[in-house]
Amino acid sequence: MEIRNEIRALLQDVTKFRRDLHQIPELGLQEFKTCQYLKSVLTNLDVQEVHEVLDTGLVAVFRGNKPGKTLAFRTDIDALPVTEESGVAFCSQHQGRMHACGHDGHMATMLGFAKYLSEHPEEICGTVVLIFQPAEEGPGGAQLMIEAGIIEKFGIEQIIGLHVFPDFNEGVIACKQGGMMARNGEVTITVQGKSAHGAQPQQGADAILATAAIIQGLHTIISRNISPLDSAVLTFGEIHGGEAMNIIPGKVELFGTLRVFSDTVYEKITKRILTLTKDIATAYDCRATIDFNHMYRVVDNDAKMVAALKKVAKDSYVTSPPYLLAEDFSMFQQKIPGLFFFVGIKNEEKDYIYPLHSSKLRFDEKNLLGGIQCYVDLIHVLNEKGV
Image (cartoon, rainbow, N blue to C red):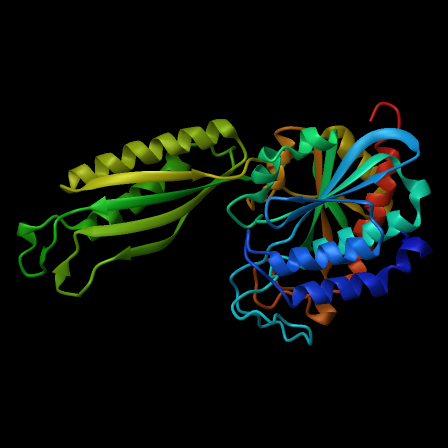
């Protein structure tokens, strides 16, 4: 995909936006400095409509003189609780916080897009709505924005978003029709037993032993209760229990994540988790409580919108495999047709190879220009008849 000169001219601004934002990472619903920076840039661009949503979200609106749809473009704005080890000169100034998932790049892409629209109003068909959404990493800012009524208030008909992605080489635009990213949920299991001296186990009910059996039992769900043709993963990554090596603990807490591509499969797995956990705990003279946090849905890309992306990305387009990663952009797609795509940032020669959420994630801002060009061109293609 050849980047047009008008978009190439944005590189200096986009680089500044990204590096400024990279230095002030903030966690979900705490993005006050970030929001202030975004609002300042939009004000300097003379964007006439900037609306505050929630405490840290923003919506900017561009209204064109030519008829067309109301299209929304969304960026996430939050960071992660990661201590940065990237070695870049513009590293995080907030200890223990980092834009380790590329959201600084997403915001810079959106601000570059806003600058382009402010300088080229003739490109706008209908209405273009830019959504700066907090808390993608948690607790789910997309749903909060939806509940705040932005889809109805601005009459949004379709929505587009992107994510920088180190699985794909620089210059690649990757997408997939239908399910591209997984539905996810969190599970917390509390096993209650009876504490006793380690030398007198018969006087207690061992919550650690029961929890070990529960973990083994739950891992049979994927292999024995779910079709091998259905993708799913259940991972327990955190466990807490016990106070001393010679005390049988009376309580253990277990934390895990569930990822699937089907609502039916998701519901089947959660039901099996409930049944197995309680029954296994009972077998060990313990009690178990299970709490689910049902988070994001499947990122399900609209077929016509994917076709539009192929048209604008041209030879830069590749079909993405499905990923069991999750994205709360999917919550918008529950309401209106949506398109979510990846922008490649991998460059092995420059050692830009680290995965998302890595403390060493790095990328070249020039790759963000491909996202801006796709956004600009999608305005026109999505307003063609029948799309």
